[in-house]
Amino acid sequence: MSQFTFKMPDLGEGTVDAEIVAWHTKPGDTVSEDQLIVEVMTDKAAVEVPAPVSGRVLSITGAPGDKVAVGSPLIVFELSEGAKAAAADAAPAPAAKPPAPAAATAPSPLARQGRVMTSPANRRRASEAGIDLTTVAGSGPGGRILRADLQTSAPRPAVSDAPDTTEIKVIGLRRLIAERMSEAKRNIPHFADVEEVDVTELESLRMHLNHSRPKEVGSLSYLPLVVMALTRVIESFPQCNVLYDAARGVLIRHRAVHVGIATQTPDGLKVPVVRNAQALGLWEVAAEIRRLAERARTNKATREELVGSTITVTSLGKLGGIASTPIINAPEVAIIGLNKAVERPVVHQGAVVVRRIMNLSSSFDHRFVDGYDAAAMIQALKERLEHPATIFIPTVKAP
Image 1 (cartoon, rainbow, N blue to C red):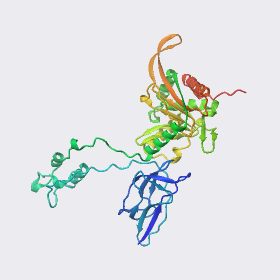
Image 2 (cartoon, rainbow, N blue to C red; image 1 turned 90 degrees about the vertical axis):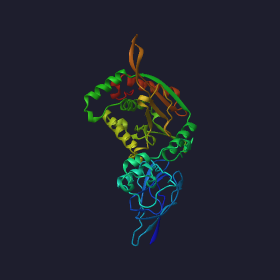
Image 3 (cartoon, rainbow, N blue to C red; image 1 turned 180 degrees about the horizontal axis):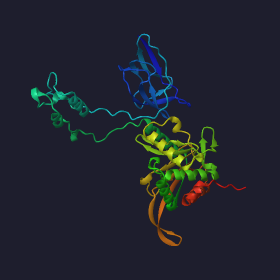
């Protein structure tokens, strides 16, 4: 027998360590090559690491929440004679939730001795319910345990023993979100702008387009229309389509508009990126937003799909409220927020009428975007949304 030590791989872009999110093996297990053994999180992305070889696990390094340096021993395998140890690079993949611990029930001091008589199905049910079969009195022939016996023996929580508090370790994506949000609020002087937008005509266009397309295409929301309008407006406000390289003290202005779409997932907030949105049509933008959101929510988004945005759009949908204060997705300098669209009475062309109103709540990095420019950009975006035909007309530049 021989041993093979697999070290924490270099996951790219200057990564010096990775956080253990969840182990999928333990010492004593036998694993096959390419079997998932551990999930880790870097500052850039979540990664699933497969086994580079087949063998028995002798030891592992780190518990969930611990960081392991690149190049440090991660897991040690015992190889069978003739097995070839070949390290395998881990392909980037989204993080997954660590499995919840199984329920456990303390055995009764009156537990029966010897073999318990019951069916395989009831053994499985008992295992899932955390029932110790040796403590169950069987009502079947010869004391055989029936399904009804399990129902009457299911453990009931003792209220008096329940803890008043629960400690949840902040690891993985949630830790990364916390660190990035704190850093953004600490280092970026946010300038907020809230503007009321009459989206009555936009809603009429949206409904018309939805009725004119096959159902399998998917329903059109406000989001792709806002993204389309933003790509037109940003041509006149290039200082908002910028990334700030703090280490070099340099603003990197982009010609292409790579729009981050803030997406709520079971694991927390992710921001998949619609690349070159300025070159896409409306239905292409809508389809890409749906595709990326689904991949993000199901932990299938690749690292390349989650990085590289130049400006972010966030929407709370029907929960959007009246206004919000979105945090800038550093190193970007601007984020556009959509709030809930509601019908209410307003003065329109000299008369009080019912119109559909939606607020845009946006934030800008005041170090690099002046208040005047931020307000002017939002006004330009408002104009496009209130006259939706202009969303499809390129910006006319002065000669």
